[in-house]
Length: 314
Ligand code: ATP
Image (cartoon, rainbow, N blue to C red; front, side, top):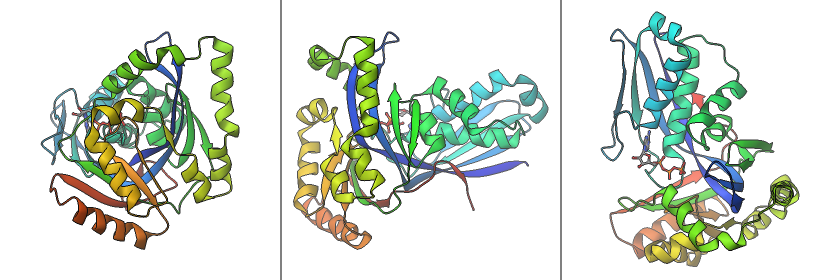
């Protein structure tokens, strides 16, 4: 195999709770993550030049060593140097559809696709869980991007417990193109403001993370009860991002007032998603919001929950 093309889906957070600090500087989290069909396309081709090269159609995305897709290839190179020598370098081309710095794990899913793609091209035969373990070294969201579907994520987000898939959730996703929120900034600010609420002792932290497994959100997912899921939407990071970026709060309100079931910021934002009753309602809400906010900077997408992570392109 000389090349392969992969579809790399975005994720939204249906639930994000910050429960405490970790000794490695990250936060202990309890999240429920959902893959959606808004996806990047990653083409990986073996190259005669023995280096890694990244190209991307979106000028907002760096194409140097800071690109997460590059980092994923460099990690595979470091881990399997014989395979790199045998197969040569890699040209990675990213067709970006997922908004950048949006809280949708856009970079993480590209990295996840590169790990899967190189596993195929170099015939390494690594299992999904081995790839997830490698991915966790690069970023907390990468294991979920590989696994996909619907899952509880605890620890710093890398410990996954799969849930039955939700394949019938229709959403409208909105983001101002040049408005970026840095994930490290959001967590740092949250720590500054809410540290006194953190659970301190290890046992209580573990119990809190465990409690998510029997939460009403999980019950809603198990029963495929969209109304219950909407009632349980929660994102602690809204507490720091919305006051700092009132335009995101306005966007969330515009979506809520459009008659959707519920709306919330995804991850560290600033993207906002609104859950709708049907694809048709999602299309109507998208048109309605476009009229209310005629700003061309505002990107709007209709998307749907999906039951998988990275896949080979058909
Ligand atoms: P997360 O939800 O995992 O926190 P995000 O969706 O908020 O991520 P990304 O789109 O992954 O954010 O971008 C975060 C930063 O990573 C940006 O500053 C961007 O320049 C950089 N970056 C590196 N590689 C990529 C990539 N392949 N795609 C998008 N951004 C990338």
